[in-house]
Amino acid sequence: MKNTRLSLSVRLPAGYLPPRLAAVAAELAERFSLRLYLQAAQDLRVAEICEEDFETVKSILAEAGAEFARKGSFPKPRICSGSRYCRRGQVDTEAFSTALLEHFGDRGVKPKLKLAIAGCPRNCSNPKLADIGIVAGVHGFEVYAGGRAGANPVAGQKIAAGLSQHEVFTLLETLLAFHNGRMEKRVRMYQLIEDEGFPFPVL
Ligand code: SF4
Image 1 (cartoon, rainbow, N blue to C red):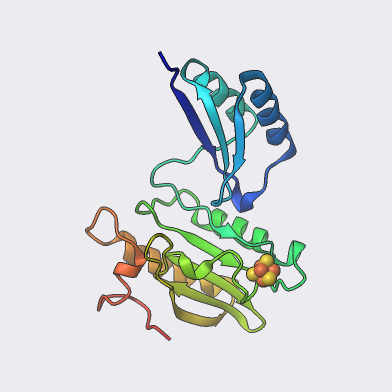
Image 2: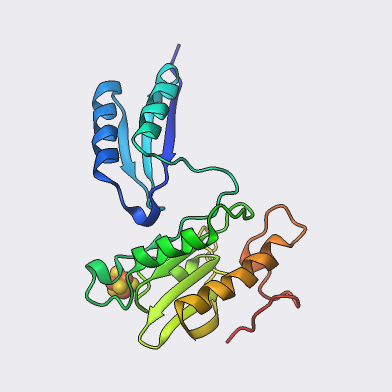
C-alpha cells in the first residue's frame, strides 16, 4: 500500500528564512528524506513527510521557531526586495511588512485575502494582483484594491496616493473593517469595489 505523504507550509514573514530554522529544516530533510521548496507566496513548503513522521517533523520545526499558516490569520504580505536589496527601492519593504504585521497582529480576516507591497512602481511583488496592494513611490505610498491573480486576473484599482505609512495603516483599518463587516463568509475585494458602501473612491 502506498504511504501517504504530507506537507507543511511554514510562514516566512517577508520571505525571510532565519538561519536556525533553515538549518533545522535541512537536517529534517536529510533525516526524513523530505523536500524543501520556497513557494511563490514566500513560504517554505516542507514536503514528502510520511504520515507517521508528521507530528515529529512539525514539533521539531515549531521548536526551531516555525509558524504554520492558520485559517483566518492575518495575511502575510508578499513583498519585493525593497530598498534593503534593490537600488530602485523607495522603502524598506521588510520593515514595512513587519510594522504592518505588528500593527494588525492577530486580527482575523476573511479567507483568501491577499496583500502585497512593492518598493517602487515597478511592482515586482505584483501588488496590483492582490486584494490590497501597496506601492511605494517618491511622493509616498499608493494603495490599490480589488486585484486578483488566477485564470482570469483582475488588476487592482488605485484608491489612494501620496500617503505616509501611518496613513496607509489608517486606510487599512477602514478597508478591513468594511471587508470583515460583510455577511459573505468569503469575498474578495474585487467583488466589492463597485459596491456603493465601498469606503474609498477609485482614483
Ligand atoms: S518593485 Fe522596485 S524596489 Fe521592488 S524589487 Fe522591483 S524594482 Fe526593486
